Length: 448
Image 1 (cartoon, rainbow, N blue to C red):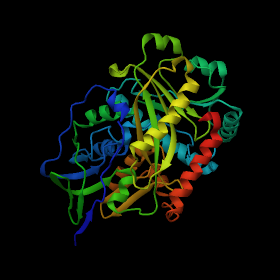
Image 2 (cartoon, one colour):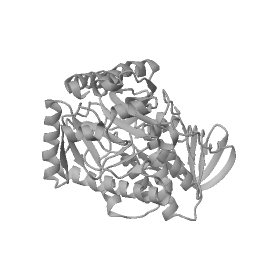
Image 3 (cartoon, rainbow, N blue to C red):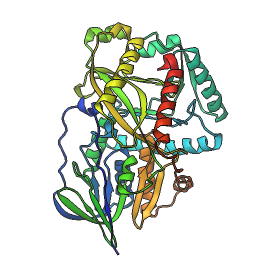
Image 4 (cartoon, rainbow, N blue to C red):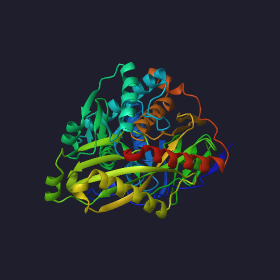
């Protein structure tokens, strides 16, 4: 018997994917047009989808693998995040990112497996250090409240026996060029990437063995002995499907009333002039995460592929269960970005923002993935809980292994998660969540 699933929504992203927009124009991949067959179809061409494609190309090398991306590569969330691949606990639902020790040790093992997988991919495909840099991460505090967050988190990672180094205000200024941060915490296991450049270069490397189609959203699935996926102009018949669509897994009818759709917002400057670069000082490429999870993330990137020296600030969260944000919400967040930028970079207070955007996150109430075999030979690799780079990569790897019957200790650990918890009903969910986020932003004070 055939089961027909009508996909209720296709992704809609407001504002530009700035990390992609600052790069040179890419040669587009074709739109699916006509009827084809494949052994594997991966729906979604972000970190999760490309990780699944990479893993399948390793363990099912003779099979025909297809990736269907709804828009252009790196135009969706993959081109909108801040580019941190974090190994240590980073639970956005926590006051200090930390959780229970046993669970955090498990998460560290899983995150590092994903980072190692990504590092090998970057090496194999000849990516530069500006695209993938295994540099660790710095968490910065700008107030006594932020320093208390760092001290609390520090006690936790000491108990986990993780390496670290405390940075004083002078060391933070040497890194960033600014006097804003009073203290920092460096941990060595994370990586930083230029997310859009990584996606584009990973896709180019994979395209030798994987067929990639852009602007080809799946609008219907017919599930049976052979599955059939329909796009606006084409069809694919396949044995196996991996849905690497994060929160849009609900658009396919799965995990209803179990996923939170949060948005975060960012702004990026125009290229700095040589005089402005000299005035700023500090290192050419760096990133600082906020000590308070509701604070402001800052990154500086230096002239990758002719993009110029630019600064990016990211803060403000909203819950939008519609999976869309309005331009008005982006403009509202822009006020917070401009305030954060002026507080940190008074020497650059006349530098305008060139790009402003919103980016989708998917979380579960109990901070677990939406993962597993949903129907016979239909697999979900969704709900990355705010860490799309590392947890998305991990989810794609694990989905490929699960679907191809490749056993591993990592897969068994990943499969041991509970399913996502059911959410409170509306309107209590959205009203309560957004009110709580506004309260936490107020509490963050100068960390915002």
